[in-house]
Amino acid sequence: MAAAPTNKKVLVVEDNELNMKLFCDLLDAFGFQTVESRDGLKAVDLARQHKPDLIIMDIQLPEVSGLDLTRWIKDDTSINKIPIMAVTAFAMRQDERLVREAACEAYMSKPIQMMPFIDTVRKLTGPRTAPTSPPPRSAPPTSPRAYR
Ligand code: MN
Image (cartoon, rainbow, N blue to C red):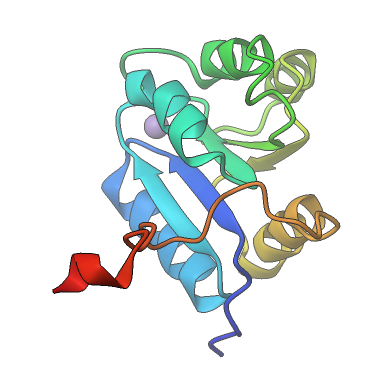
């Protein structure tokens, strides 16, 4: 099932270990690179640092709401073009409205289903032909001499 690498990077903000593993295993199997943030308060800095192609945002986090994080990201012009896919544990009309108001590009309730999840990830990352992020490895030294 493993797909060719896409060179697309997804930041996953999720405090639940099982969901984090599920999301990252799925993304990995479909060729996406992942950056993990279990601590919501670190998510905005990680987004600035990695410039991911998509952010998957758990709404129920212990320190801060994923809706607040979304607003902070959308207020920052250096990262506010990154699409955000919200995931929430309880699917209620009220939630969907709040998520839309916070300007998330997509919304999914847990437990997630594999193909709708990946289809949405692909839809949100796919049309972007030029990745905004640098290659995943660190830049090589400027001169071959540095290797000696
Ligand atoms: Mn959570």
